[in-house]
Length: 333
Image (tube, rainbow, N blue to C red; front, side, top):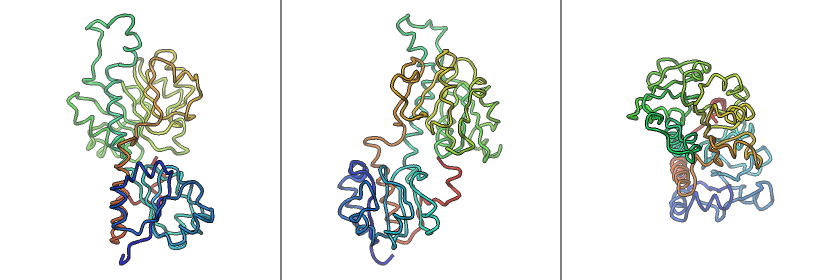
């Protein structure tokens, strides 16, 4: 593009300050004509409308409301949306596609911390850390009773960008994990190239010491791990969920964990957050964290860097690295 595109940030003020600290914002200003202040809250007010009127590029983030038709009507010159976070499902409406707008997400940048977190808890799960810690006050386990990670069978549900990242890290590990994968869009040959054996979900559940969920949230994946599937998971195994809470039947998982049969590491829940006093918050063999596997704190600058690089590509008229289409949303979180 010959002229620097007029660009607006739309996200929570605290998010904008963390994702785009001063130095990074100055880099952004070198390639675009950036509005002085980010838009926060509603995008349909008179003040927001005045800012959006000339916007060609909208950089969104956590705290940005859905980009419905009435919002887009205020931005007649808008050409592209760059989301400085992960999923765009709650942001992008049908009106975005009808307008033919370019859409990009920093999901690749957000995936790294999730992969790190997941591999860490799979390692803990493989050593039965939660159940062992719960018995700490009874005395240390005998040497013969201790469990290690080597040779464990790990079941990965979903070859998403995060699922593939986890597979790559586990395959490269010295622990000689046996890796299983279930994903309706993956062939046996492709699974083998990822170091995994492609199996149906029920077989994955029966054979895995650790089951880690990385599928998208879709109508057909609601309660993918329901009572019947959880019942197939072997005694002493662990369920890990860093995807979406609705993929797990909360009541069924609570029953299995309360019985002591299964352990769980949950970074997402359904509902989210869980009500105070819920058993999954108090059981000693369950670790529930507040959706912190993705970029947090110092990590969120990665998202800003990704978004700025996308803005630079847009300003040069180059394809967007994180570009998405309507059809992609049927397979993404």
